[in-house]
Amino acid sequence: KTPQIIEKVRVEPKTKLVRSGTGESVESTTTVFWDVVFSTPATFVKGSKLTFNGNEMELRKVDEFYDGEKLHHLELRLI
Image (cartoon, rainbow, N blue to C red; front, side, top):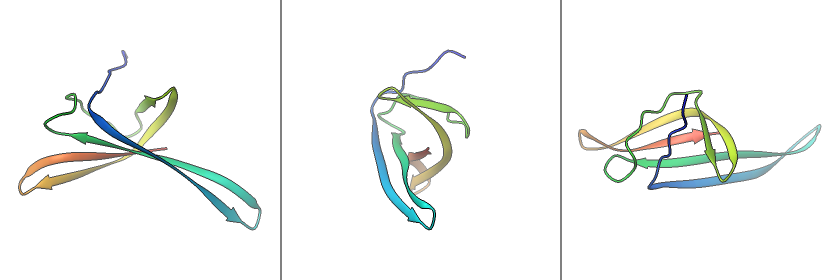
């Protein structure tokens, strides 16, 4: 499938250090904020691959946020 470029989104990458009995690891997650009005029209499917700054990530969850009864924005959870 041909990649689609999605513009006018906000991207928040996050990393955290996780310590356990077996050592330390770094967990990385990214949230993409897609706006109904301003972002490039797109459909998002769980399990899809998204690339940002050369890093390919998998879409794990799509959260919908409404302004009254109208969809306002989506928050895409990537790992």
